[in-house]
Image (cartoon, rainbow, N blue to C red; front, side, top):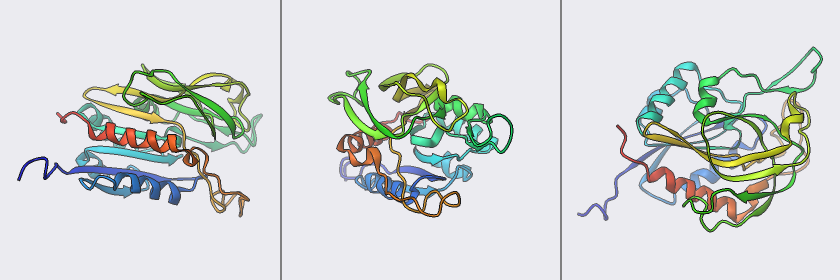
Length: 258
């Protein structure tokens, strides 16, 4: 039989877990997209601590909020990337959040710089966002295969203000005109921010896409027993699924690992 008849197996790790988001919804949607190619075989975890699974993976996709790998896992991720791994990081993967209980910023969310290696790999750390409201995403690099043919679009989502690290190849971006709310560093949200970008690491790379907030009725427990709406944000847009499929295609088109 030819290679065309039997394409090589692609081992994928999906990390989906954390707080304040509908992880069940995001996990299912991502698994459905990955399952469109039967050569992709996926293992699913809520954190990064199955280091051997990550080392054995060809590709990695993450949708998390406030999930920080141990230093051992971060070092394994760095080695995996430098050897040729590709990582599609979504939405809150770059978040470290702590609600301050005292001091002048009591009641505000802080973004402590507790995982510099992780944020250097990802290329950014989440700092704040304004209230969820419509905003326009524009194409920073219309010639790149990941964005070719994508037109500017409006989404109602969390607009991420981020601290960026290293050289980023920005693919999508947006303008923020209002400060964040409820965060220690909220005022700095005004300005231009990446929405999707690439960052190279040795033979590998990270593709980061900040879109894709989702929340169901039960996802703010224990702070709030019942959230009144089911929020799907960019997941309601065909263009977001186009970007997800393109990103998965980019993952699979990886070079051979060293």
